[in-house]
Length: 261
Image 1: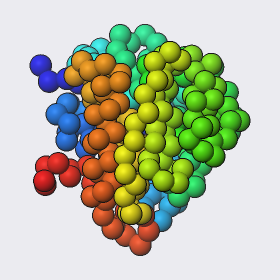
Image 2: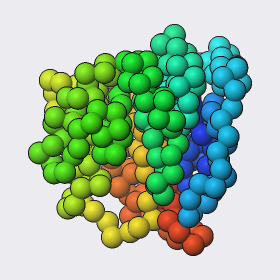
Image 3: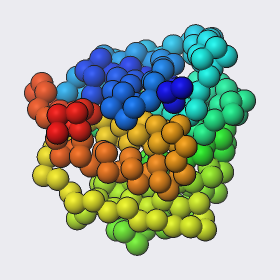
């Protein structure tokens, strides 16, 4: 049976990030994508014009509907908006026998807040402890731990700070640093540094969602965490290189770049 992956995230009406990016990534990587929508955004290439979270009951009902009937081999989380939604999703994941990739989305590519400040402690104490892999970017690391990463040397203490909250693995995404795009994957014992050339392309909307979904897809296929992250890094690097203009602002990465190769 085709591997099944469930994304629990917000909708991006512009199609570059969120649920839309997740499902495109899953299709491109050969798994069956399913979705639990946590919030609806009015969003385009220049920013987020509005966001409306769904009731906890609606999120819980979507999750149970999919998991209890179809089943999942991996779960991926994105925009969860509020403390109540974070806590509910963490509870659902803890009762699901499948690896979970937690992308602790705090702000959009354009700097718009996608997580209430009051929810940060719930992410730390409820969501991160149930994560198989947590994938914060540097801004999210600072939000969650107070550790500021200004060079590659800071990646290791940043990872250690996130691991204290309980995820089995953490991937610190160093894409905001100058030079090559260097990410650090570690479980506190093993350590992997994943390097990729930086592409001169500003159309990078959806990179975090795409990477986390690609990792979840790999885990659903039975790959180990290091194998899944390595494959996902390769996929998202190609998607960034092929990113294209859309609208007046930042365009999306190209989820189908391999299909057009």
